[in-house]
Image (tube, rainbow, N blue to C red; front, side, top):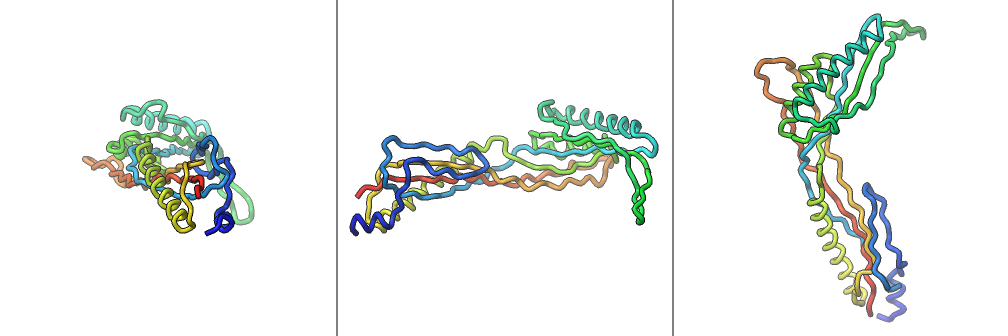
Length: 247
């Protein structure tokens, strides 16, 4: 194969590394003195990781037929009970965050476009990070029992607190795939691979499915804790690697 034919088949890449948009910041490493003629490949590696914590969204909501203040005070009382149970379970203050607080009137709307005031509603939503999945179900059960009908668990989302090990495994897989692709191109097109000219990486962690929580027997004696099954989540690493071409 002539030099002209090879040049026509292989795109000339710039010395700057290619960047891929992803969920994590893109890191680029550029080799000094990279050759102007390169072959670039893209490869993705994946690895599974087991979630070890979960974020719970908890809403306290109360109503009163005549007073917004009464509704707000009832919500505050129920929220305090919820927080007491959360902290009793060993959750740190840094893992508890208030997301929304709402107080307002509630109307009944009629078919002719009118409205009638029927009371007032107060609500507060908390996000609580539970760092022990083994006790997450029991903690949420205690929260619902303490707050009664004023409390609901909107969602429970497991996550991996430290995906570093899975990321390293996915990266190694991506490097192996990228190298195999580049070596195949070199064999098919009649050139040799030189040193790596550029590398860019993007990593991401797929969100774990939210776990549905339902406590159908609040206050039942000897109730078994609600089970929480975290499943697995996938970590992926995508690499763009450019090798210098040697004839």
